[in-house]
Amino acid sequence: MFTGVARTTAALDGTIQKAYVGRSTIFLHVVEKGEKRSFSWIVKARCRRFGRSMHLTGEFSSTAGDASGTVVLKRIPLPNRVDEYRGLPLHWFSRLIQIVTARLYSNEWNQLKTKINTLAVPAEEFRKTHNCHLLVAALVLAEDRRFYSHGGTDPIAVCRALFKTIVERKIQGGSTIEQQLVRVLTSDYRKTLNRKLKEIALAVRLHRVLRKDQIPVAYLVSAYFGWHMNGVRQAAQRMSINLKHPTVEEAAHLIARIRYPEPRHPSSHRAILTAKRQEWIARELRARMHLLY
Image (cartoon, rainbow, N blue to C red; front, side, top):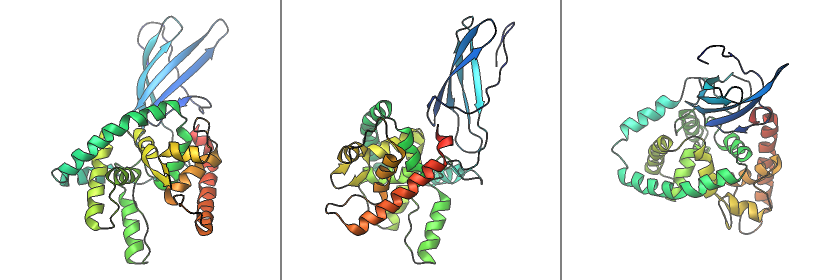
């Protein structure tokens, strides 16, 4: 949208082939070529919300006549998105939990917030100096597919886990990435209902403090990948993976260790499980590569 006399009105439509893309901020460098002149736009937009109605608002500057203005980018729904949920927004569930638990777990939240502030600096440094996009996409696909739809906890995953546990007598995880980050930072792995409720409440409050693009990176920096592999840096160093230019196979190799951490002593059974997990993550990533870049 432009204001003034003799300003151009333009629409940007197509596929982003090369850009610095984040889940919260997007930078576009658009080159427009005409018969008499060529000029470029620098567009910066920040995501206003996540989910089905996600859009980005921001500003742009142009080399033609030193023009500037505002921009709105609306997301077009595509099949096979990393975020595959198509139902009602899940944020209402998180808001309900936040209202109910506003006065509960205040001491635990203060302790967690201190750890978050300590973790924020190395996480931000890691995000700026490494290619996190592929690792985050693999993490979301493997651990929390509705990550960009919920507000810290996923009621669909919770109901599914309860059904599997009560009816089929199978233990199945329903934790979001926020909940897993809370579990790592609090070092509380007890299998009790009280611990689970506290984890959900803290995850919802964590969602209100950190941006969506910060949470997966913070989790990668602090997650346990196996014996002497605390954090993605140590894991990549032991596996000889270059985090600045990871491949699909290397990203899957790392993220598979979140569910099946590398044991102290090699195990053939664990190696088979990890290999199957790694192959599945790599296949899912390749099927969605046109949506990741």
